[in-house]
Length: 260
Image (cartoon, rainbow, N blue to C red; front, side, top):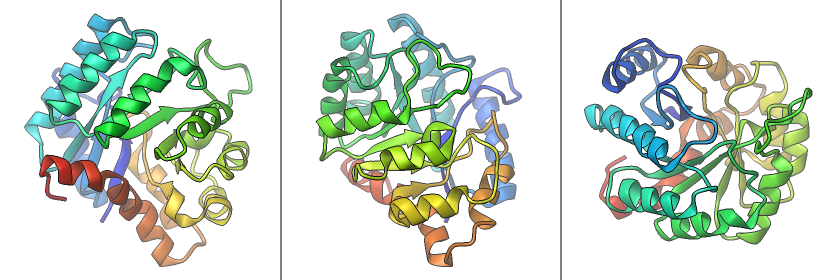
């Protein structure tokens, strides 16, 4: 069982969300990937207005609506627009088919403005994914690092949070989040170098690590190689490739009556 935590419609061929989702699934089929988590639009926006948020989320709703047995949607939110974000969370998750939350680079996740979003998402049992990065040339103005998500996780210690990309510079990212037990590592998006997955398993435990690709920005195969080529037990690979994500998603899937 392989579930991909981290997919986008951008970077994929096709004029419509449905066409792009079809392309992703066709490639996923060749890779043996069963389910894809999808978020953000085509193209995505760094600091989306409420109108743009709704537009991008509508595109994802179109994409997953065409392939409901293969895809999960995460609602894209901007903490600079709290009321609009809470409205989108209710529209797309509480009253819609989405099962998670995607937070990107508009606002550092360490600020208290995120708290109402995290609280409401937790009430809905939604999976929460926050992009993080340690950029050697400097982050975008609102871009979070793993240190930011540690602050957020400390304010919400009972809420599972996923540290997107594990900060890009994974050696720093793994060390940053290892002491905060409600934080989980996403393997997606960086180069498939040796040692990444091994260190994550050693420092965090295999139960806190999940495979993601960042397709279409990255290939499925290069990111799967991080797991298949890792010097870790087969039992750990199974957890990382899908069992961990399924465990995190199971509360909301059960609540929505979605069979996994």
